[in-house]
Length: 122
Image 1: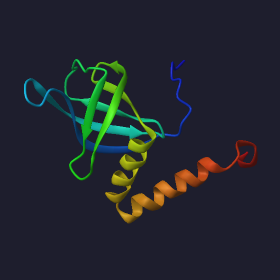
Image 2: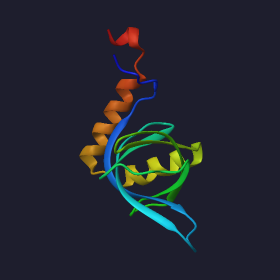
Image 3: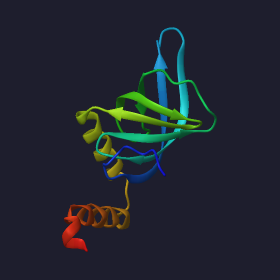
């Protein structure tokens, strides 16, 4: 049985990003990661090796703005981050902009399917 508590719909993205933290003038750390999926409140990322991640970090995407994020959990190389509403909307805009037309149609279909009341779908 899964210990998953999230009820938000997740979207798979597989997008490269950087996790940064620390003081840029002194000890500043940068860890490469891949964003595995997003939800309305956060993201799940994976690093190449397990890493010690502080509570607050900045996520930087090569084709979009940076986002302040709060680490909520870690499991080996996987890390769950919570975003503010403003950051979540900016992140989704940046990710949607990078999708192909076919990927956008697929995403719209998934979103529309998630809006159908469960009793009406059965």
